[in-house]
Image (cartoon, rainbow, N blue to C red; front, side, top):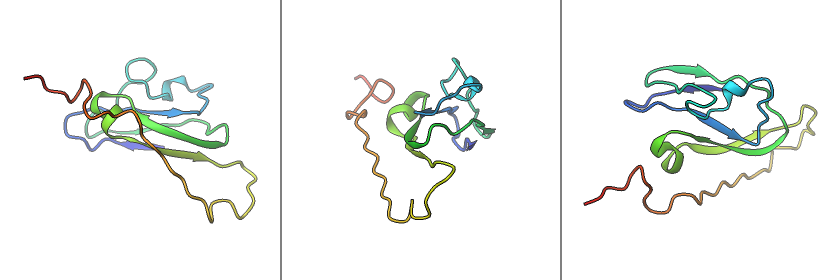
Length: 109
């Protein structure tokens, strides 16, 4: 997975829920814990084994991106997949963690 940081001032990391990072813990996407953030204007190839098969999610781990921005579905298909998988498939991703304001975006007056 290639991460291209086109943000002007923020760094970025991407964390994959449900993906085992056995042998590649530095690709886990937790900023300053398991991975260095990708700086503005940089590109990073996040290389890992996509395992186990299933529907997972990814999200950013820095600032507003955690709660207000970068997240989505990440689907890993088994190596031997029947031809019909994916033809009539609908993926729904619900976000429940943003409740109007969070510490990164709230301004106190």
